[in-house]
Image 1: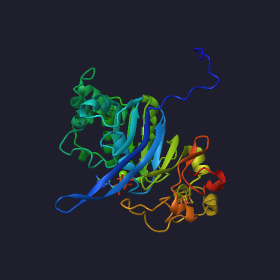
Image 2: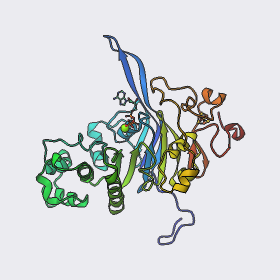
Image 3: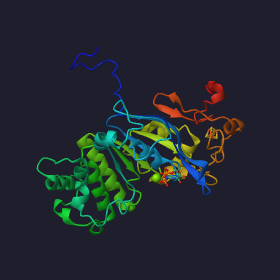
Image 4: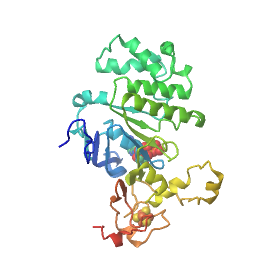
Length: 348
Ligand SMILES: Nc1ncnc2c1ncn2[C@@H]1O[C@H](COP(=O)(O)OP(=O)(O)OP(=O)(O)O)[C@@H](O)[C@H]1O
Ligand code: SF4
Ligand SMILES: [Mg+2]
């Protein structure tokens, strides 16, 4: 029992805000006039992870590994093929439009492209105020006042609510997208490559804005990125994806300093290092070949066609995602700490 006001000896970890189990999304490929299914794009293939209240979970991986599909599944913009999604302990996996309506307020998405995600014919006021109209909510003081407050919150001039998206720069447009996502005071924000379309010089500003807003509003984030540099300073934990699977999931510091998956090591070796002495010492790992097609992914470990450590078992058996150290899980038969699955005897 915990005595109020007394620190508990072993604090219970907070219940996850979002719980994902065995999440799968296969896009069917159809052929011929009868549109018979001839195969499937295995975009997301069995993801299991939690998102804790107040944290930022970074999700990284190369193009096509299923990051956006994962984001659209957990915000319920896509219907999963299999698996389970719980939000605040409630099963939302197959909720219909009506069932999702109250949830829509709590879970919002920020998209990659601030050019195509804002309707060019609508004013900023209409865009940022749209969530209120869609939900039939009138904020205290009226929509206009609330929109102006939101514009100020994301660092835009509140007087510009009558302007159109083309009158703003890329970074400012992404701020408009952020203001719209925050309108209904969500609990979870899924940001899909929120800065990849922006100039490098303003990427940090937008990432810092997200960071400040998290602190101010108590938000929980899932931030998707294609490399490890953008999310380095904002993520508490990081999930590395490869061809529809999570291959490593760890707290930020062990992931950057002691990655266990060869693919994570390769991704890290591509992150720019400002210090020239460290840069010279570091070996750059160039991955051979392209990412294989998710229509017919490689057998066993999906990374085996590009992995310099691959052995016969890698092509034959899929390595399960195992927690090797507290808070550090990896799916690899020959992880970087030398604890091979044969030695662990853990592969079943
Ligand atoms: N609606 C769809 N129908 C068919 N295939 C799809 C659909 N959406 C995505 N895919 C495929 O699923 C795979 C994963 O795509 P996804 O967009 O999730 O990857 P991503 O990691 O976000 O890539 P990127 O870094 O390029 O944004 C890709 O092979 C993609 O072509
Ligand atoms: S399981 Fe084998 S192929 Fe896959 S990452 Fe580990 S060593 Fe490489
Ligand atoms: Mg994407």
